[in-house]
Length: 126
Length: 126
Image (cartoon, rainbow over all chains, first blue to last red; front, side, top):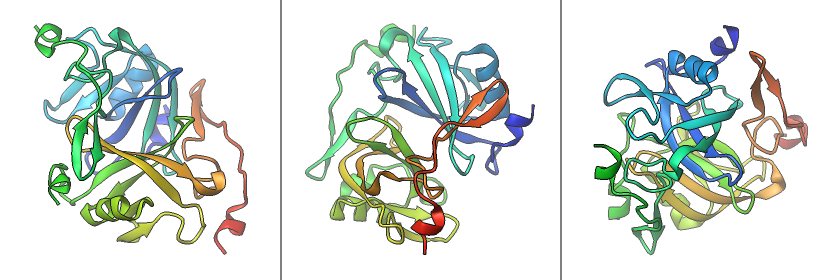
């Protein structure tokens, strides 16, 4: 599939992928994709990433049920960043139980948590 | 400054930084930052990146005038991605003369351009 060949994969064969919430435009998370993850994302309509820590494909929501339904796939000018427009199942993208991963903001030289935990991670990952 | 020490810089001392437009939530671009770029971004209130191709600090807009005024700096749960909320001067973030860099969308197995060129790059970079 030539559209996959247009992506400029890095030395590890990966690109960063941003998941942005449809409707609100909120950035939910950034993860990494290899060629297979992106192919599966397009094929299944569900976000699939490459887990660098676990070194395997990561079907987002496979444990938590917090899947991401993908409505658009974009790529940037250098073709080295992928942008997904998604619907976030359960309203929780972050493994900390928050709506999204960008919950710390720099205020007066300190990182301050600005988003609440919606669900205890121990309840999410049993 | 300890808040800089909280960032999980990669092996090259870099993290990806997303510039998101204030108000619209549109993702303008993704670039890279080293410690100095992030420090300068906070200090000056203007987005400063690290150009991996030119291997030097890149004060966004230094040639084009298309500066980014930063109103918030966030970091994700793993502290390895930075998110900037910015006002985009000139309404053009991409070096191709488009509003943002994510102007290609996957449609029926092909990347289709979905954003217009607002200004000829030759007029931007003289």
